[in-house]
Structure formats: C-alpha cells, structure tokens
Length: 118
Image 1 (cartoon, helix red, strand yellow):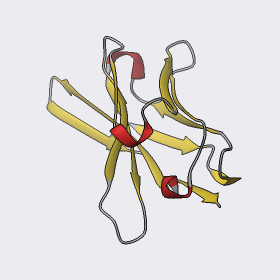
Image 2 (cartoon, rainbow, N blue to C red; image 1 turned 90 degrees about the vertical axis):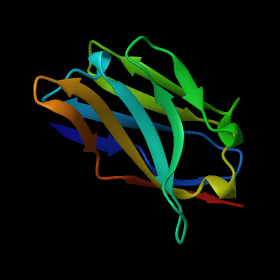
Image 3 (cartoon, rainbow, N blue to C red; image 1 turned 180 degrees about the vertical axis):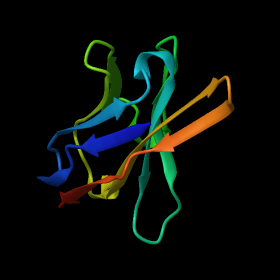
C-alpha cells in the first residue's frame, strides 16, 4: 500500500488549496482516511477524517473552512482548505487505516507542505 499526498504550496492568508491523497494497493472507499498536519516544533495533529461510511469529522480550528471528501472512482481523498490562516502552515499527511485478514493496517503518505503567508 502506498499513499501519495500532493497539492501543497505557498498561499496568502484567505486563500485556498486542495490537497489530494492518491492510493495504490488499497481501496480508499473501504477505509477510514484522515488528514494530519505537523507544524515545526509541534506534535502531529488530526485535522480531518472520513470513515468508511462517509462520516466526516474535523478539528475545531478548521471547522467551516476545510472539507474532506472522497472520490471512489479515482481512489482519491481530498482536503479542500479555504480561508487559510498562517496557523494552518504545516506539513500535511494523509493516513489510512483498516483491518484485513492480517490484522490492523496503518499507512502514511509522505507529506505535502502548506505555507500560508500573512
């Protein structure tokens, strides 16, 4: 299983970015998928998640600004980020976790850097 996160970049405060998480070796539509972020000197933080059934959850700081979604046909998960703030600056990682015949599985993408300038 491999995850590939992309879509990061430099944006001004108030701008938007859409992050993409592409998967190979697993069907993201059958898994829980989360987006995490890690700012310099900080712990990794769960930002948004989508369950197998499509239920979504968000950390309070991004509610109303970020939207996680899934394209089952393309085997992709997205994180639409609007009204970005300098505090959103971080490396963003996608993660998928599920159970199979071999037990619990947990995979991470390589991270994509989001920089929001004030």
